[in-house]
View (cartoon, rainbow over the protein chains, first blue to last red):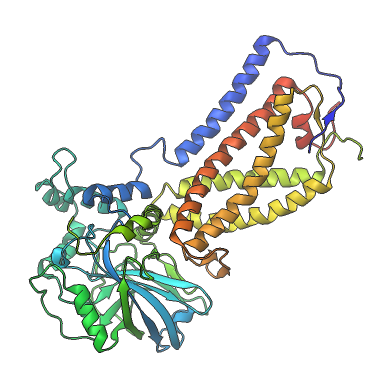
Amino acid sequence: MIDRELPYPRKPPLSNPEKLARLAGIGLIVLIAAGAFAYVNGSLDPQRLTPARVVDVFERNNGVHPGYRRNHPKGICVAGVFESNGAAASLSKAEVFASGRTPVIGRLAVPTGNPYSPDSAAPLRSFAVQFTQPNGQQWRTGMNSMPVFPVGTPEAFIDLQIATGPDPKTGKPDPAKPPAFFAAHPEAQPFLAWVKTAKPSASFVTETYNSVNAFVLVNADGKRQPVRWSLVPEATDAAPAPDAKEYLNKDLNDRLASGPQRWKLILTLANPQDPTNDASKAWSGEHKTVDAGTLVVDADSSQLNGDCRDINYDPLILPSGIEGSDDPLLAARSAAYAASYMRRTSEVDQLKAEPALEKQP
Amino acid sequence: MSTPVKHFAPLARLLHWVMALMVIAMLFIGAGMVASVSERHEWLLNLHKPLGIAILLLVIVRIIVRVTTVTPPLPADLPAVQALAAKLSHYLLYALMLAMPLIGWAMISAAGDPVMLGSSVRLPSIVAANPDTFAVLRKAHAYLAYLFFLTILAHLAAALFHGWVRRDEVLDSMLRGKSRD
């Protein structure tokens, strides 16, 4: 590739001190460049909240369950279709809101950190949905049955995980820590007030699932409308959970055997004064809502080999016409889910080795 | 046989310096993005993907320019081991400029994610969705990024060594079109 050239007149040689000074200069430049890189990638800043450190906190609290998601690891895949009625097409140019059908792959889950948690371990359920538009763009959303998030920032969320997790010294949760956390975080009051009344549901399909975070719909004219969305069930026979460890998957199977299960996709349009950057705050008072269509679920499959297993339900995978808001939790969820996904995708073989979901920890 | 030249062709020099800026920016963007849970993560990610595709397109042009223009020879008195290191590191830099965007693209494809450049441009997937493939590509993308950065540091140090210590024409051959006399 490179030939040698003939010798040419050289500049006068450098003295040894001159040579050393220049070598030192080169060394300094390389060191500064390497240092800048180490600063940017977080190596010089062990306190920085990075995606990997968020996932580390989950692994410390819950143990490592190879192959599973690092949060909400217990769940079941579902499949179906979203039947848009076109009512939201004037708000968003996303194909999913034009009249018609969009295939979906979803995942219903129990929001704990352990894939072997009993179904009643949390008074919450979660529903993640991936809509695949004809143009190949996707809308992924991870929703929860709570109306508001406990806190508004990733830093506070991690502090909450640390406060409710095992103490590094004793290995057991410190009962003094959660009250101290909540005293320092008055923004958690709406969530705490709700969770007091919340009870584990007997079924996934009787729950309402909320985006919790705000997003922005953009229509063909470029008009922007902040929204939150909810999946509101058509099933009306909500019941308290039975006294059993596992009941959600059987309930879902039984219901699907008798027919598809449906939720209305309701968009709640923000009023001008509503906060879009704080998922811990409810949007109170009168709000315009739009019924955008019906999510129809007609099949389920195990998460160990179902279609939802390899989907990272990153809330910032959005089609043209839906954008993230200024809610700081969105970027944090996106970043942390990517770190969880990176870890679990290299462990899929171990997941296959698990005999059944019912296995005890 | 072409006549030896002392300087890289103007287009080769332009591509070198433009891509140097882009690649270094890209490595810092990547490193900062995976170390952040703030809005910066999203902002940098949205910069990372189109910039990577731009580098992929430019490196193809650059390879064509490299093989079709005359490259200045290394000094004849350069020790053989240094000449070999120069040659191998240049091959490595070209390989990484080509491979990193392709691995990034393939990795997003393997995750089953739409390969979006901005909010409405979608590139086709170049590999089938598969978690094992994703895991391998995702790790390769990270390790090769470190290798890339270290190779660039070595390249920078070597270039300065030529210009400041050996005081030959190697650094000049990329800096300017005419010799200083």
